[in-house]
Length: 328
Ligand code: XMP
Image (spheres, rainbow, N blue to C red):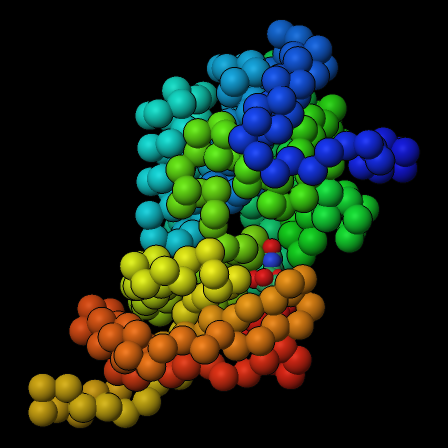
């Protein structure tokens, strides 16, 4: 990618309304059609905002000539793979390859404690699975990517933090990057205009290694379920109480130690769940969100009742710095 191709045109208007989004969509559809013609395009569709908007745009432009690959690595949030299938296969009639790679990832991660090692394994395995799927498809000439302008500004066009390496040389396709001059808020306006559900368009940031960095230390299936179920309760309660879209990032963490408790008159020895809710502009610094005490109590009650293997709930009061947003 040449530098000049990566500078947002000075006269490009900010996309703030549905009307401007429609104009952007029409222009990009024409540009995509002229770039790829009858060619086939491959896209790794995580279900995050950027890849979902790219998918919806390309489906409009070239229909089934877009092949979307959704890899379920077992570290996604509750309901996410189902939502990708529902929205893209069932509603948009996309050419979607769903890969259940849960056992494969969890087996590779078994016993690995070091956070950076975990990230590397997840990134490398992701590329391996994606490569295998790409090789099964015939005639792919292009690779679509959800690169957005901050990715270009921050890290030379590589998505920050992704640690995924790249595809081998014989699978280096010509890139299709229709969002590369858009800021996140503009991507959301375009996503809304493309008819994607709010739950997808207004999603909070979610790290590439997913719940893997929130299930601390060596990932086990039981603790991973504690993270997934407690996160689902937290998200449900934040949405019900008008905090979705107001709090920048909120999630739960499950450490790899247990503590003593008491349940049904008997001693228990189970995992804690830690709740984290922060606000930030750029993720470089962050403040802790002041969540109403009654809501925290209600979420605590639900987690203790509904999540198996948990006997304690804590709220993380640490700003960044000194703590980071994630725990690993
Ligand atoms: P930290 O924990 O460094 O996080 O304060 C800052 C922001 O980056 C996200 N994050 C990641 N995103 N892959 C990602 O795609 C990663 O490995 C990763 N680690 C942290 C984090 O969720 C927060 O939004």
